[in-house]
Length: 118
Length: 136
Image (cartoon, rainbow over all chains, first blue to last red):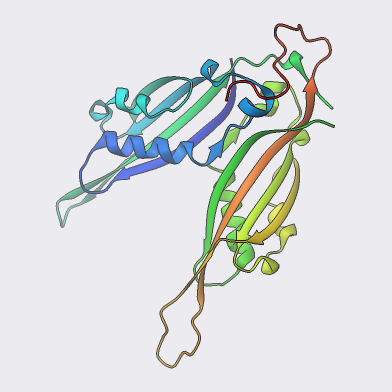
């Protein structure tokens, strides 16, 4: 398996302190800054793609990884949640805004011997 | 020649104060590029310099974009930049005594990455991907 792209994004939940919501928004941000056109132009099957998602938030145990995995439109998704991201505490108003970071790695079984530059 | 498009990267950039369309365009391209790390050249065993990069930047005044400065953003590959009409200008609220509003500028960028590539002759038939179509 070769990694063909790493997509990065951030998402937040400003008022609800919902780490899963922030994580899902981070994944959407990561996904929608690129399009993997090679599946169409080179004839690879995107069902064969492996998608490794890493979510970073301050309270990893609060993330429903199954819901995050269900958001991935193609390929075989695996979601790992680690401690990271950022919680922003507003002491004056007693609110916490949570920020999630998402890294989405797409991997495909490409044999470099199958292709040459023209 | 078999130019194959392998990826598309999308971004947005703004110029809030300067009304500089080139600056907004550069920020849009950087937003497109730095949300992603493309490792396809390595996967195919090609040098990064073989990447063919076709860039569309869309702003309301495409004639104001210095496309050479936008092309200079790319660290490697062969970039071709085209400025087209699009993006968005948003007029700012008028200040006292001001007759014409200044604009906040939004630029959109689409960065298409291709290789001039073809199936290797020696590739086993059962492993050689279909040249066109396939599952999508």
